[in-house]
Length: 188
Image 1 (tube, rainbow, N blue to C red):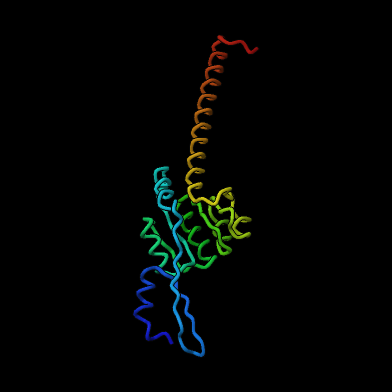
Image 2: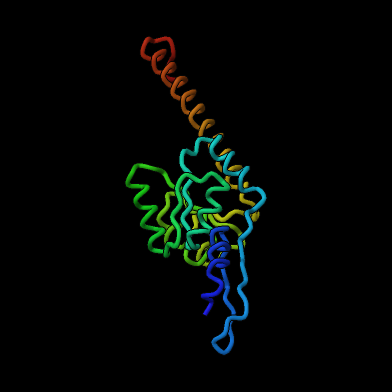
């Protein structure tokens, strides 16, 4: 039993670490404290997404409570859903869509498949699990999180250009129709 180590175990969990217990012959031998590392570009990417108009950043993870909350606090995430199963992730995304939100989901694990399919846009990293890449709408070419912000910026520029070109086309066509109706422009 690791009962004698409760205080240490609790402290490690509160630091957001996942614990691996090692025992032999029913005697505790060691506790390894593991912690995922944030990608160096994470904070900058989330700040850029907010600049581009993303209103709400939500973390949906299968990780335990403490590590999920630690990451969320470090990054300034708006909402955190931890210890979620694949179907739970998809349910949360469906609920966000029911609220009228457009949802982009970034996932790279086997259990992200249902969420990637449920989101308006599913985005996967290039080295993600096969099921994540297969169910995503977009698979990034580089294993860089900041590619998501770059992609959104390019998409917004493209939409502005399309909108502008549409307005110009409507204006030119309306002017031509008006001139033709007034006899100022021949049908030829």
